[in-house]
Length: 258
Image (cartoon, rainbow, N blue to C red; front, side, top):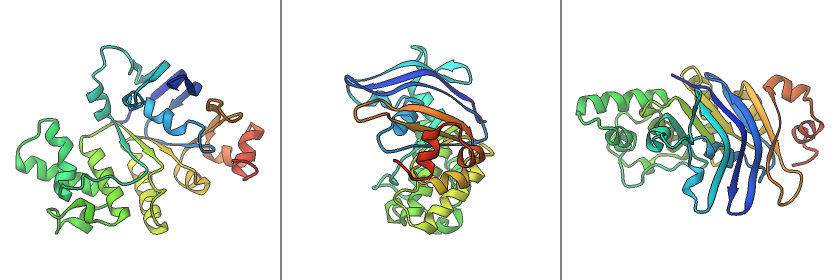
């Protein structure tokens, strides 16, 4: 199910501002890849280029190559809607559809993809909620508003919504930053479980979190105010956190800057 992502010399602009420059990175299937680095270094911009969400913002552009299992996602022949189904995204703050029930939040994408039969929808909703570790907590109140759940439950609902359409990649932009410590650990455990089925990329400012959940860590930084973000180093998480090759990586991880 999961797919490899590869970028080559990827650049992204907001108007005339170059936000990321020359990002060449391979993201392997069935692994968690953590992106770390100081604020403003382009981590979130980078992952938004991987499902073409960056181009939703006016006056943006992307240059370079981004491949999903060898296919250039910026090729004119690519169906962007289908790409975003294949490459799902979970955002920093939980964003369940506020007027929809728990059931309808999960079923929304399935309906858009043409699933109509109630029994099929019910089975898919249950499967997705189980996959997000939420079923046992909500199975008796599926018709209540999704916005009535706790913050951690809302984030797991958003994950259930993302995996319901059976993507192959999950992009997560600081998925725990708005959550309490208990909810954070629940989401972390879920991410580790999900990597058996998905390619997962997680943006995080939490060094301990990156060390706990990721197989590979990529360090981004900027050289100064107004400069673009660049990928400095990538490697197995255990190596990045114990013996990085670049002094800038070590300085960030040990808290000497950033």
